[in-house]
Amino acid sequence: MYKIIVSLYRFNMRGANKSISYFATLTNLLALFTLCFFIITVLLDMQSVLNLWHTGSKGGDYLIGAVVAVPLYLLMFRMFPERKMKEQEALLTKKEYQLGLFCYVLFLIILMIILFAIV
Image 1 (tube, rainbow, N blue to C red):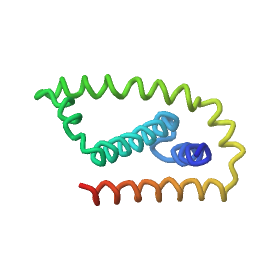
Image 2 (cartoon, rainbow, N blue to C red):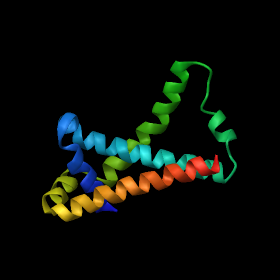
Image 3 (cartoon, rainbow, N blue to C red):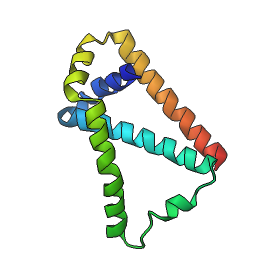
């Protein structure tokens, strides 16, 4: 799993995300975990949990989103430090990089298919 994350980090080191590659990688992981959360919520038939997040105003919704997202980012900062990612990225071969990106995209597609199939 860590090779996939490091491959995603290397991918984000190019182009528009070059200056924020670490933050972009963590954001991609947060989006992946959010997708998994939605799948679990739908599978367990707990859509009422999602109604708690809707306050009726955009400011309130953003505040609730920040209260949920900030601790997750802090957890990911602890679990996947940038220093360790840079070390692992230097050791990553081209084949491992390509395989890591392929696995990430495949995992994302599978999760989307599952979500659309159960909704």
